[in-house]
Amino acid sequence: MKILVTGGTGFIGSHTVVELQQQGYEVVIVDNLSNSQADVVDAITSITGIKPHFEQFDLIDREKTSAFFKKHNDLSGVIHFAAFKAVGESVEKPLLYYRNNLVSLMNILESMIENNIPNLVFSSSCTVYGQPDVLPVSEKAPIKKAESPYGNTKQISEEVIFDTVKSSKLNAIALRYFNPIGAHESAKIGELPIGVPNNLVPFITQTAIGLRNQLSVFGEDYNTHDGTAVRDYIHVVDLAKAHVVAVRRMIESKMKQSFEIFNLGTGTGLSVLDVIKSFERVSGEKLNYKIVGRRAGDVEQVWADPTYSNEELGWKAMKTVDEMTASAWKWEKVYRGKR
Ligand code: WQD
Image 1: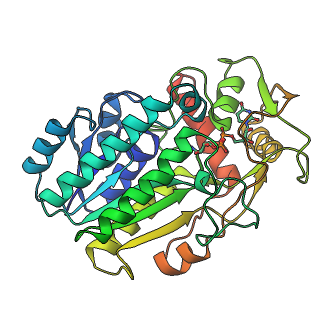
Image 2: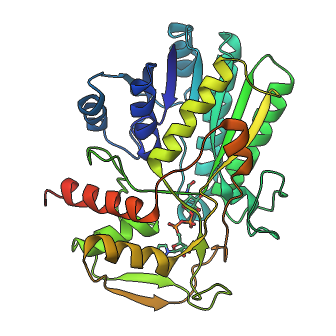
């Protein structure tokens, strides 16, 4: 079984390639390396002993995408990660985000239909829920107006997929991620933010290792147990495993409808200070941080109701927050050459 992983040298993509290979799938990676590095392919190979086929081109290029799918028309499925995903940048450059994220998806959908490739797993996000009225948030929760063009590209993408599935023989599963953190236990792959990290955990580990001098905690006046914002942090390997379960579900025709949506979270909400405490516990480091004002666009609290994923997919997030922060710290130290 051959699976295409777009964005396969990225954070979640690379971890998913490892899990796919270890479960016997042949993997082809397409990535334009706009937010990742080619040596991730070697890192994946060093973990699994199997070198994935890798092609570098931009999926917004319709001709190149069409030619690729013609060459690989024996694909059993596609897992589509490749997209721009920086919330703040999407506010400054909306057209860049709409063009990149939507045109690449449409090129992929067209080529899959042209070549009778039936199965698509789409990388979506809990940002589609905005600030949910009810917590924990299930897949039945209403979609709220996106807080950013990035979040809107995820909402629009789901709609584009829904309409395409209805009008073709395509099957699709959208996986709505909560907050993916951590790294593979080998510390050979992990989160590689380019420049100053937007996300919490890479900023924590870069502060602890001395790359950043202090973490700013965005807000301590939220209506939460300790005043800092709450999220559902999930280990990237647990997340990667869910993608293999989803692809197998489609290949084995276990789907109940041609477009399915699943929340991928632990079901536990943790505050910023909870994560900092976990990091200090596992690293033995005292983290240098200060409380500052809220960050624009942040929701107060969101965590998943993972019941549907647990029962219908037969998948459950297993790793604890300490395992997540410990793996992120190990990755940071190994990547920066410090043991
Ligand atoms: C988490 C919490 C911040 C940095 C984003 C995307 C989402 C998904 C995950 C792609 C928040 C606080 C952060 C810092 C802080 N990405 N924080 N200081 O915003 O929940 O979600 O990443 O799919 O789509 O929107 O994640 O890690 O940026 O923030 O206090 O330096 O940590 O305010 O409460 P977020 P995050």
